[in-house]
Length: 321
Image (tube, rainbow, N blue to C red; front, side, top):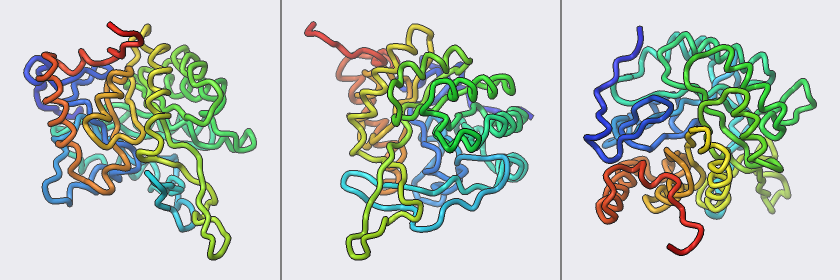
C-alpha cells in the first residue's frame, strides 16, 4: 500500500518545497548514517520527524554487513571521521521489518543504496522500488570490487553505469550522492544526468585519517574514514555551486550538505544552488537543531520580503548589483 502523506500546500508555509515532485514541509533532510533507519532520534525528548522535510535511511546493501573493526569514529578539529563500513541488516530485512514501522504521514523517507558491484546497486534499487519508500539515494562512493577497489563515484564512467543500472530498476526519484574525492565533479554530474538521475546530494564526506601518537597507529580500525562537520563546509559549498551550474539548466535539484550547523550555513547553500539542505554531523551534538535552523530561515525570509524559500535558491550574486 502506498504511504499516505499529510496535505502540504506550498502556498501555506514559506518553507514548503517541491523536490522531484515530492512535497517537503521544509528543505531539511536528515542525512544517511546519522539517524539509523529513522528511529534513533525519536527517543530524544522534543525530537519529531515532523520537523524535517525528509529522512535518508542508513546505507543498505543486498545482504547484511557487520561493518568495519573499531574504532569507527574519531573526533577532529571542526568535525569528525567515521569508518562505519556500511553495517546494515540487508535490504530484505529493511523492507520487510523496518519500513512497516515508519510513519510515512510524518515526513518523507529516502532509501540509501550502496553496493560493491553495479549488479548489487541494481538489485537493492529494485527491491526498494517495490516498497513505500519515497525516493532512492545512490551512494556511489563505495569501492568497486571488480575494478580493484576504485570508488564508483571517483570515475564518471563508473558513476554513470551505476545510475543507469538503478534507473532501469525504478520509477522513484533517484538522487545521486556525489563524491568530492574526484578531479572534475561537474563532468561526473553531467554523466549522471545523461544516465537518468533526478537529483544530486552534494557532497559526500572527504577522505582523511587520524593518528594516536602514543602508539603511532591509526585511530580508526579502517585506517582512513570520511571527514564531515564544519571543517568541510567551504569545500561543500563550492561543490554545490559547481554542480548547480550543470544541474540547474536541466531542472535537477540538489541536496546541499557538508558542515551545516546553523540557519546561516543552510541559507548559504540555498543561495549557492541547493534546493534542500542536509544535516548530519550537527545532529550528534544537537539532536534538536532542525527547528532552530527552520526558525532562522523564516526570520531571513521575513527580513528580505520573500514569500517562499525557493526564491533564495541559486540567487548568489557574482558581481555587485
